[in-house]
Amino acid sequence: MNAESSLPPVPGWRSPAVRLSLFYGVFFLVAGVLAPFWPMFLDGRGFNAEQIGLLLGINLWARTLAGPLAARLADTFHNARAVIVGCSVTALIVACALFGVTSHLAIFAISSLFYFLFSGIMPLAEAITLRATDAHRGYGRIRLWGSISFVSAAFVGGLVLQFYGRLSPDTVLWLVVITMGLVVLVTPTMPPLNPPHASPSRGAFRALMTSPPFLLMIAAAGLIHGAHAVQFGFGSLHWKAAGYPDWLIGTLWAEGSIAEILLFAFGGPLVQRLGPSRLLIIAGLLGAIRWLAFGFTTDLAVVAPIQLLHAANFGAMHLGAMLFITRAIPPGHANMAQSLYSGITVGALMGGSMLLAGVLYRGDPASAYFAAAAMSIIGAGAAVWLGVTWRERAQA
Image 1 (cartoon, rainbow, N blue to C red):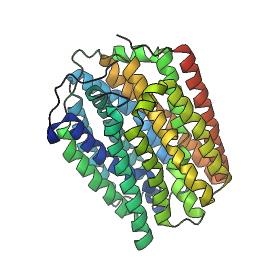
Image 2 (image 1 turned 90 degrees about the vertical axis):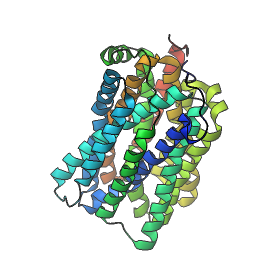
Image 3 (image 1 turned 45 degrees about the horizontal axis):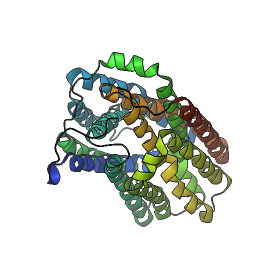
């Protein structure tokens, strides 16, 4: 197991944990703008539901290539932080290029490039974080600052919409540029933790993609995470159509993230006890309950408590995947493992799910949520298979 960094603890803001917490807090401000409000930006530019699903799906597919490419560069130059800085700066420049653009084709091209660059950042940051701490205690307490930022962005955004009306597309874009600028300022402060004897990325890719346990973990996490596509892409629009005011939509997004924060902050002993496969099973089963409920009703008395299941539906899934990578993947393959996890689960599978969600939602919103429930159940089944075939032994 890659449990603790060999670096000695450093007090104050120079501590790796503090600097990584700051990075997560800033990075997820961008996500807090993109997830709830980017569909509104696209809607304001004249995209319909199916086109929004197509664009978001293509943007997510960009991660499939971005992650492994970033990992290859990080391993080649033995400097993950430099790659993160480069991706951040270039993504900011590309985001600025969207101002004044109204052509659907141009928006497709520019936003896809933005997501490609933006997607190369987090897998390397996660690998650095797991080398600086451990997956069942320290990681969650660093990662929670990202969730806090997401909550803040979603909640404040909802209040702004409530008091000032619908945000213009340019206002949403300004929020992306400003928060992305903060990422650019923070990334150089990240600790430069690189594995001392990293294996070549090409060898890591082959080893991981021929490893049955790794592929089962990817399948389980990818299906459970991909089921979120309908909510990420159309949740705000769905609640808006049901008559929810903007402040309430922001509050519901915040509620789910608050539950996730509590899991990250206090769930360490539970995470260690359950292990990767059982965390993924729980995430899949409770996720199915969540999506079925959202498909059957928009009654706030049901939606509000069910939204708390986000802690298990997403939080337990992500912690299970991180714990698997910590316990099963050699340190020299960590960059590639994180990149493949992000590229396949958040990229390829989420992208395909977003396309399906757009088609289904346009015809019948309930059917999109029912499809998400089916994906979660299949993901839980893959996690059961993982638990049966893998005995959670760390590899040398």
